[in-house]
Length: 582
Image (cartoon, rainbow, N blue to C red):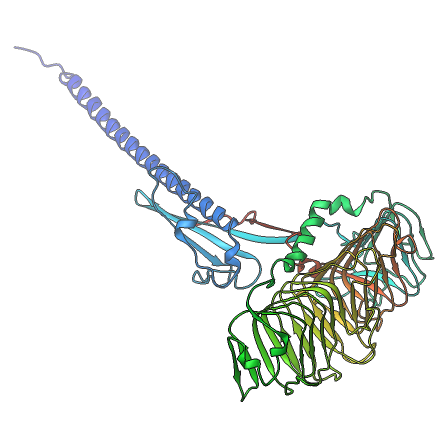
């Protein structure tokens, strides 16, 4: 009989167990590999779609950087323009959005509606079933990039006489009491002479905290106060604002030399401008109810033209003349209560306006005058004369002045002047005053609005006149050739306020008078470059009386000259974010 071993079949069972374990292990390994591969594929897809979205975003940001149209209300995002730099072969479609950084988010407001110079740029793309949206904040920043950050800058001396003062305020006009380090400084290439009333603090600051620093290459004198100036390191103004930039600013002011009607039009004799035969001029029509003459064609007047409410060729008071391009081969005189407008004006002689007693607004478009401009305001303070031009050129320019352009005429004003970029050529070599704004010392102020006014000859301002505003400041530029033949000065005696920058080369700035002690003569900065110590006294900037210069960065920022400003558009660091990823 055969015997039975108790271990018989154990090897088979063990083999089956091992085989099963290996099968399970293999299945698990396959699952793990599959899961890992699937996860890697998903991660790869997520990274790929994110990369495409980032590439699209970079394209859109580049487009926005190169086109600041999004700062204005009419901007609508252009998908093709935003996609112009997205050139990856075989890349998926990207859709774009540009919208203001509002809270709550409103993607239908495409432009910078809140005025902070920032918008979101957003890109969305899909790849292998994955969707990703990324965005980044883009900012437009504009700043004065050429000129030194100084309230007063002089290549030679600065003298503060009387009770004059220079100080700084915050952007909102409140006193700057932050102390050192100061937001700006007085920079002088030689000596600074102060007075014992000088505080370098805002008159509205009861603590009298110094608001502005001092940097000079020479000595400090005239005061018992301690201001701890920094010595050395002041170069020439031309080191900042070189000849190329000076020429660019001059060209900006000279646009009126080529932008006015200079010739052409229907030829007409000046004798035609009477009530009896003016309507015989081709293209002239008359509306008797409004007393308005309208000209549909440009005119070329063959001699001096007078439009007046008195004399043999008088027009009724209240008559209105609406011209197209008006080319006057001689002087142009407008007297009395007449309103004159033109789309462009060219005058080969003197241009005079006077005798108004009612509220009148004359508007001339681009204006070119080869002779002297003499505009005299209304004799009443309530019925003001307003004169508007586009780009403006004249040889000599005076407002409410006596015949030699050297002071207030004593009777007319106030006048409201609004000019485009302006160039006053002056009468080189004679020392005649090229620009003179005058007005009464008290009462209602005249106003002058102009983005940039430049000249090569001396200028005067006196009386109650306000120039520019904080929102729309001026740039007053004198580029003189002080050859010693005559005095080249800017005599600023106005008792009103000037908002903006004054930049002067080879011409002394004399600022005097002051006003009520609360409002500065100049809200902005005065920059003088006269390395030879020019002017009458050898001092670049001389202040006297109760005069003052107040530095306000907001005013400087609002100066609009392209020759002085740099606009940068770039992403705001740290604002990139992924707002959707599936």
